[in-house]
Length: 65
Image (cartoon, rainbow, N blue to C red; front, side, top):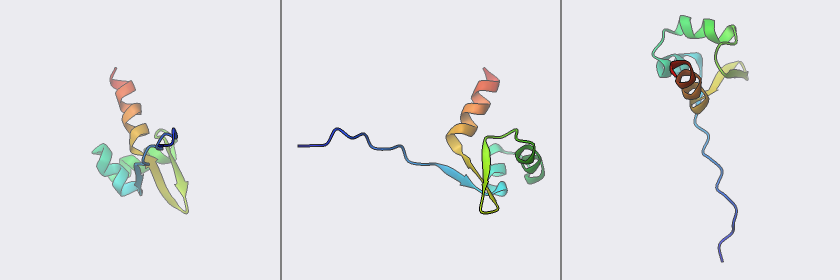
């Protein structure tokens, strides 16, 4: 018999300011500014920025609506 446990969603993380910039189609400088000012839903982990692709999408979908 199968378990009723739900499968956790796969984490879709973007690591590093350069990769986040590419995902947002922004320059690294623009992205770093937004990261440092807390304008993007991201955190520093071990000295590198990390962001959830889903949260970034939700942020910009909310702004467009």
